[in-house]
Amino acid sequence: MKKIRQQFAVYEDRKARIPINKNIAKFGIISDTHIGSKYQQISFLKWFYKYIKGRGAKFVLHAGDISDGEFVYPSQQYEVFLQGVSQQAEYIIKNYPSCLPTYFITGNHDTRAFEISGVDIGKIISDNRPDMFYLGQLGAYVYFGGVKAYLVHPLGIQAYAISYKAQKLIEAFSTENKPNLLIIGHFHQAYQLFVRNVYALGGGGFQGQTPYLRRKAVFPIIGGYYIEVLFDKRGIGTFRFEFVPMYKPKLNDY
Image (cartoon, rainbow, N blue to C red; front, top):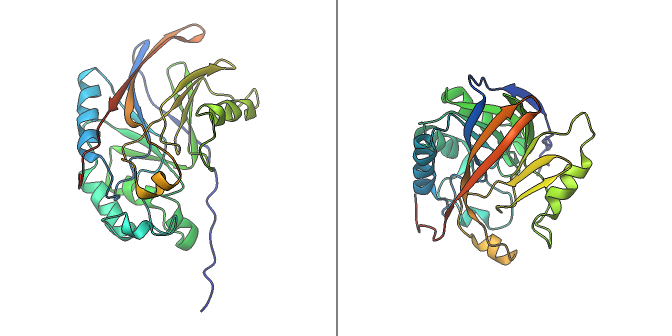
């Protein structure tokens, strides 16, 4: 059998700017929706979008793993109800919330197909949904008002201390690349800290505990953030957040 040549995903670090008309930005932050998983929480995701829109949010930032992908780990095929990039992309295009524009990166689940065959599900979604803006693989900068935000979907497993990876990520930024706001996907955890003048948020997720996560001793936090940022001459004057949790995941939400 001929060995498949893999195309490894890279941090693209694209830069996007979102226009803000006033001295305040209201928006949502989410991550790890894992659409296509039998454990997805799409009903809560749709409710969350409507809730933050009612609060005045104008857009949503998504820190990766919009889809569950395939062949990411052994036995994953038994944890998805949609097989392949085409089925997962079509479902997202048809069913993902549309009441607010979404700016998203892709994570390690999304990029698995790209590594194997060069197919980029983020581009497929963005080409067919004018309200969903694809910012690239694994990491991207987003600018709005006085905010320089960085969306990142790191690699590796959850550390013993939940906030440890966030602290190391912040320490790794050079001064000129350091953001004001760091949004971290991948770990399915919700936490907040302020280090080196960086507001860092664990993006949570919209997927219940899969058998794989249970074997890894990871209990995912389901939910997303409603954010308000007031600007002044320094950039971020006041940073306010509300984490909106879901305490009991819905079974067979697909």
